[in-house]
Length: 298
Image (cartoon, rainbow, N blue to C red; front, side):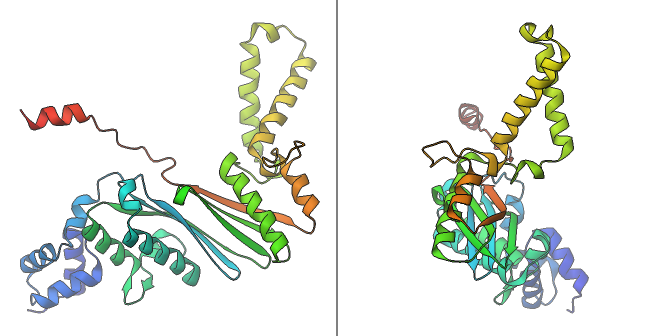
């Protein structure tokens, strides 16, 4: 029985399996849709679709730097146990290398990209079926530079950082950038410097500060010019905390800023940084274990 591309697409939608796996199943079953589904189930591939709804908030961040290209990628799993699995970690490494080599536009384009004899998307489906947990390629960042690039991974992949600088790519530069990357990992700045902070962010924070002062009996009756100075001072303090170059350098003994530390090394201009923290922003499932046990014994 012959089959068409439409049949392959339909089988993929039914099972959640990769296109190549669906095509192979239809070839092996002579185009019989029901037998093809059974074929995929027997191979353990059709189970991936059932796992797709589960929350994957664990996982790892991996970095890959090769020459003038650096990549940071986050791949999620359901449990921290699977995140430590060697096969899972190798898959994440393959994903990072593929991003570096092919420069895909987004995650969907990445999934359609070839890695060896298959695609990243089909590899993901196969890993879900084999390992038995839902997994998700959440995001990636790719930097191609004419300067220097350093990666830093903290806590076995809980946090990953890339830092790019306009500088000679030597040991002195790498040591400086590694220190800056550790700063980014520890203090999680939102912007490179205050010049990069959007005006709407500043305005939003300023309005919050105004409301705070209005609701504070100690300050509400103060003259407007005094309140304005207080707001300016507090906003400057806040920006100092969220801007990397204005932050207090954590390894300094004299409370110098990151900008002053970089300047003291000489010949280095920080251009950008990227920071990923595993699972940040994902609402993790909170299981009620007692309720689950109670429901099982009813």
